[in-house]
Image (tube, rainbow, N blue to C red; front, side):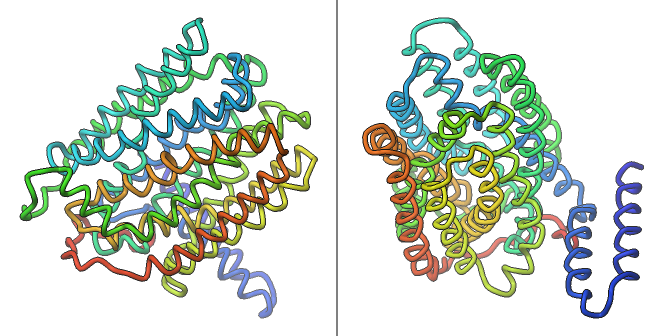
Length: 443
């Protein structure tokens, strides 16, 4: 009933757009109607696609209750900027090692759905360690354990979505992924306002139930009625041998995401500290994260058109170029509001990068290593690379200054775009798997 009402409302708005405006305004009306259609459509011919859509929303809500506020949480627990860099780097290293192990379990022993449930359950339990009063060493150990538990969430969920989309993944994935950004935006703003009143020590008690609810829901909804396994393929006995083959298939592109991840790691924590330093509070920090997600949603909603016209390689490079502009701008902006508003531009760039990176990796990797390929890309970009970025960023931020940090990050983003444009030109010769459910035509 609710979905029909929402669809009718959007249809009514689309009708109005058809009837207003001069012929010169038809291009704008067409694009607005396309965006509304993407957001209003039932997103899938099958129940499996609709369940995956909701899973992305729930993960976005849970992750936004913790990740945007982590640097300030650590600051309140007694860490300085350099120590935040060391702790988050150690957590990133643990994540980089753990994510491929989780992915190999999913590809060889379990299904991705089962691995996802166990990872979420572990994250819900471990995050409560951060709430225990104690020394910074206890907080650091808890954070590392949490990063091990949550390291495969994105890659496993992407593997599930790509598996269900089949041949339609190049155009269909973006319209599923944008749900995570929508959930992130709503959660970051609402919980940012709550934390402004209660303080940041409430964060573990927000994240634990949210990720636990997702674990239960994912197993009952995504786990039930799982599609039949693909036909078995010849594979080596050793998972390490298989992992080396996956790295070789992705090698050039991994260099690109490594460079980009360094830039993300160098700026991510310290732009939050910049907002706080210039007088912004939890509401503005949460709003900054939400601003980025707000522009990710329409970008991903329209991504299928852009992919068909320009291809994923060019969109990935364009996303890197957008980040170059944002990072350099951050070097000179001193208003916390304008720092936060530049996140709107980040959302456009991240929308291009997030979707293009997933599709490029899926094209370069054999289909039976889908979860492993996604884990390698994500653990490199968000696990290994931020070790260099946060350690180096913490030193540069403290010893030289934030302006140098942000300009250097822009140089790295530019290099990542150039390398990615070249490396992603290769394509895997792996046999494609057919779609397991009818792909979403208007989702």
